[in-house]
Image (spheres, rainbow, N blue to C red):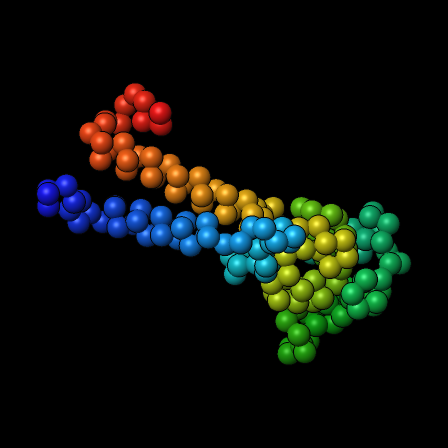
Length: 176
């Protein structure tokens, strides 16, 4: 009877740990009205988004038709933000890091333009979407989709274990 139990196997422990996390996730309540989008951004997601933000120049603003526009967060004109950036780069010890100043645009999503310091603050706070239109920076699965995927993995693991315990092999009709 003891021979039917699995021997210690690091791969099995890892998959058992993953299966345990799937079971925890699968027991989440999916009956609520909320779709349950995952909140916030991870540190890696924040770095990826920030690294992709372009630094706009006055001619970029002119080409985009935003030369005389203002930031929808702080209401400063974009030209004032560019002047602040230029002044900070000329100073030995600016009040804010020069790389956080200037103007940027969400080129990978909605295209909205903001002062860099305002948008960087918004993103670094973990907000997952544009502050103006709420377009998601990164496409994510909803909590409901994650729960359903966890339930499918649990079901597949159960069928495989059941098949093995009943003397089956991995070929043929494992899922029948």
